[in-house]
Length: 225
Ligand code: ADP
Ligand code: ADP
Image (cartoon, rainbow, N blue to C red; front, side):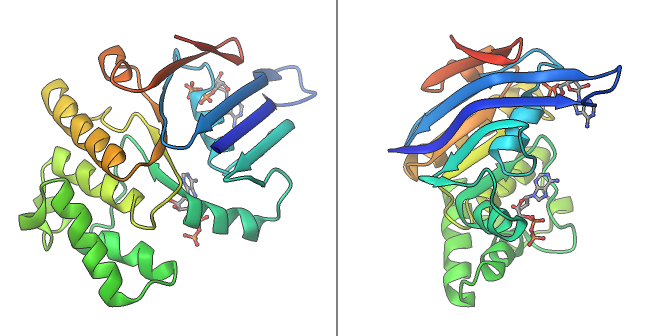
């Protein structure tokens, strides 16, 4: 079964104006369950636009977005927000952790917001942080953690509600190269252990080569390899 199907996705900005720009031109993308796909794109090619559409943060001008078998293309906002919370995990270049809360609380809070009980949420946060080697850092605030550690917490938060699909935009892009490699391996370990499906945008071809498939976004469409 497929976790994500994007079919015939078209997207332009400034439609009907002199500065209209067509970014996606009938793009197709399918992510089977358990597959980790790299998304490689030159700057300005539409990587963020595609991730926002797949992440239900923006709507295409044409085409369908199906997540876990549910067509959410024309769904109302409440349904899209619920699907984002329950089905999707997001990781960005910058972690956006809540600065006034501990690492553990940053992973517990999204679970409580999703209806989990406190004890279960605490247990899951401890389990996830343990998997990324941060058991000893659970009670630290983000500011007391290194950049690589902060990003590892962000990965755990993305997985807090056991999403079906992880969407990541340059998840190690703000780290120095050595830290980036290590932290990326931690992310891949976490994704593999949990059987998660993922779409991970990166400029780093070495990292892309560690994934199951590499897709290149160019001229509004995807090509393999
Ligand atoms: P990438 O993430 O690959 O750098 P984006 O998806 O951010 O690319 O943007 C693709 C193109 O669409 C770029 O030329 C960008 O300037 C343009 N663009 C993105 N968002 C908007 C917007 N809200 N309004 C107008 N143009 C936009
Ligand atoms: P709520 O306000 O109930 O948290 P949101 O729609 O803001 O609902 O958030 C749902 C999910 O979508 C969260 O995981 C959040 O990280 C993500 N999200 C919301 N808005 C954005 C955005 N502009 N860019 C990236 N991710 C977003």
